[in-house]
Amino acid sequence: MPKLKRDLTMEQQLARGPLDMPFLMLVVLLTVIGVIMVFSASYATALNEGRKATYYFARQAAFAVAGLGAMYVISKINYQHFRWMSVFVLGISVVLLILVFPFGYGKAEVGAQRWIRMPGIGSLQPSEVAKVGVILYFAARLCKRNTEKKKRFGDAPKERALAFLDRIGFLELVPYILVLGVVVLLVLLEPHMSGTILIIAGAAAVLFAAGIHWGWFVGGGGFIMAALWFIITKTPYMTKRINLWKDPWAYPKDGGYQIIQSLYAIGSGGLFGVGFGQGRQKLGFLPEPENDFVFSVVCEELGLIGAGLILALFAMLVLRGYWIALHARDRFGSLLVVGIITLLAVQVFLNISVVTNFMPTTGISLPFFSYGGTALMIQLGEMGIVLSVSRQVPAPKQG
View 1 (cartoon, rainbow, N blue to C red):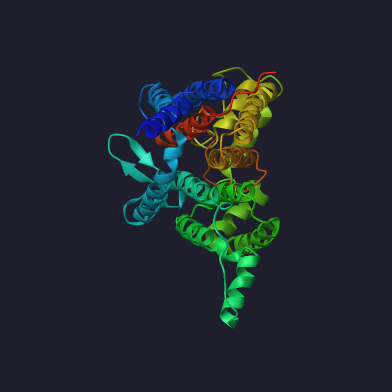
View 2 (cartoon, helix red, strand yellow):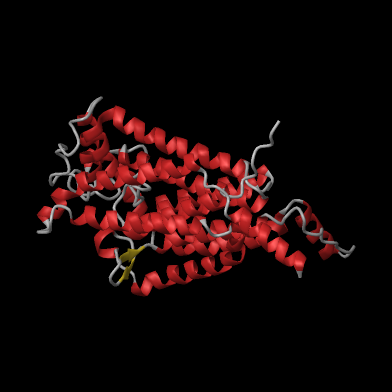
């Protein structure tokens, strides 16, 4: 009994370690800048809808405050508890992905059914929960791969075949392939291509960090590329997206309008921008500038220098996140942070790529900047998990 009590005390002390201040300050800074940019990008939209100019800003600010509070609460949780929570989070995300088909919306607006209405709160995108669920589940299982006993097989032909599959690592991958396959299939059926890419990226990052042989990533990457090629060329939804990407000016009123206006906004910002709040493309030209294309408003109003500084903040956040992963107390914490930070980095890259027409337009938000309360809270919750891991980073040895 005294030993158990002593162990619990040590565990509590570890969970109460200091937060990683550089990471925390970067998250807070990006969140504050994001909320301010939502105000600049959304006030014209709000007025056109007959609302107060601060409608979107007030809602986003409220969710930001709640999200930062949730982030702090999550950071106080000993991240070891996320091991057993992982199964429940993954299960809930799968249920939500199934429920989005009978109860979701979005088909009429954007041609894809991705959201579920949450009375009194707003809307929830189940794929956002699925990203976290997959990373938690993979990290919880893969952190134990080096301690698991090796399977033994007999001399029968079937046993020898299983032994070969085990030797090349295929049997180990089967449960992860099945879980990822179910989640990805449900997201693809919405359809949500960018969400699919993000989920695969987060899962692949955890698998790679866990030591899965690089050959499986080459083979898996080839299979995914072939599948994406089939989806792009054989589905009208994605084929149209590719045609719009190649030449948006050929479809100025039929899908290409938004990216054209985005490029106008970016180009008109120049080096120093037209000034905060002075952007013109958000005044009825760029559709929904407070959402996925908020970075276009950033470029127009803050210019290349302002946009570059914001990207530098994201880069510092990602690098600091990987530093926490490298110095994590154990393998589980390291895998957890690698998955979450890779997810963040890929999401930022994809959003910037879309608004600059580097890749086809798809529904993907810019973390901490795009309007959306539940998405912002989930993102800040993810940062809370990283901070929870940072609390247990071993102190540097003296001398």
